[in-house]
Length: 145
Image 1 (cartoon, rainbow, N blue to C red):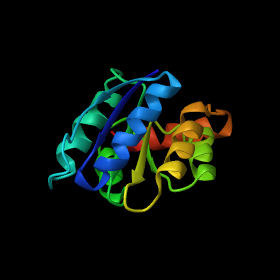
Image 2 (image 1 turned 180 degrees about the vertical axis):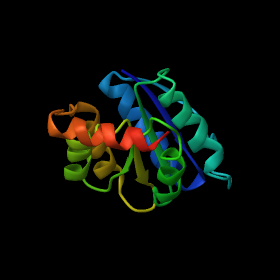
Image 3 (image 1 turned 45 degrees about the horizontal axis):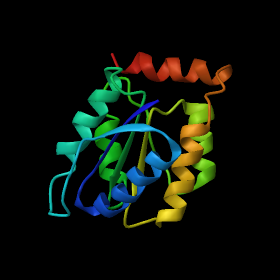
Image 4 (image 1 turned 90 degrees about the vertical axis):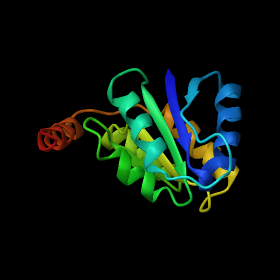
């Protein structure tokens, strides 16, 4: 599975830890920035990362900012993206099972490294259950135009 990952300055430190973790789990990823802890605007990394997932170049994407809110709002503006902001493992599991989320957002100033690792592992390892949930995903897709 190919993963696109990005952060703004508020998520930079957590992103570094998550990239190391992805490597340890054997996942291939591409870092879409930012590359330093200097202040920057999260739309500048969120949109290109979401577009790379929406295009099919990457199967999943992970976005991290201070709270996870800004990057999730941006990602969800891109057609075909279902980005879930998760701060716990249960939400990460359910968003994959029920919403077939293809992007994960987290807050670097909200959760710790170990919680973030558990969220990422769960989110990447959980499959979409389909069934009645597919009908709901189809309704979301129909609203995208």
